[in-house]
Image (tube, rainbow, N blue to C red; front, side, top):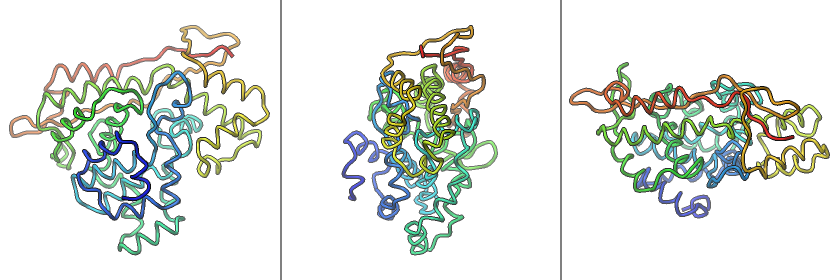
Length: 348
């Protein structure tokens, strides 16, 4: 076991063991590369973990990437697909999808992905390992080409499955126990969807309903008032600092979140540091349907809706749970139709 695995908390270690009883040895060297280790200093929370409004466990972008790789390995035993899962977030900057807000990519939240191939190709350590293992860059630099790794919303992929588990384990809010994750995970198999393509799906309707119910709650939490406020505030702070030459785009990809926060708190601009500290120590946000006067506010009309409508074995067929379960249909519609307040603000 390498240093990364040894330093994980016990919950994450047990969670990884559920995802794959075997930890493939070829992953060790890739995890230890500087390009992957940078992801260990970025939280999957998109920066929300640094405000007292949230009570979240530390779960890094590297943890998420390793877990996705383990899911892919568990179902495929394919090294190339597994590595594509490990690398899929290698281009993640500090504060994760908050930087998509900076780029005004609210609906897709994919604005940083185009750097994936560049970052892998510029890592001499990863390229040496790929050469050693006889793998071409293009075979691992785009996990979208592997249907078990990734597919379009609302299908179930390894990526979507992983963040539903880990966010419910406490990265967003504590909603799962490990034994519940294990029960759900062991019910999943590779099925064939309506397009004749392989996809992860459930054997049993009741377990699939349980998964969809919690998924629906998490979907709403990703778009709740305090979450979108926090992501936009961090994006605006970074934009302001960038405009004033206090931080560079390169810093977002090379520094840790802790180092960027130190830059924010010591930037010398009282307005920036005061706003950040009010947010950091706030216990809640305010909401309004009318425009707040002389307040910093956030108003986002369209935002990415993260939800899953998985396949379920139904006799000899595989069908979408939305079409065969009243409970799941209601849960999915709650996720899709959830609306935040028109204006979200803090008093500064």
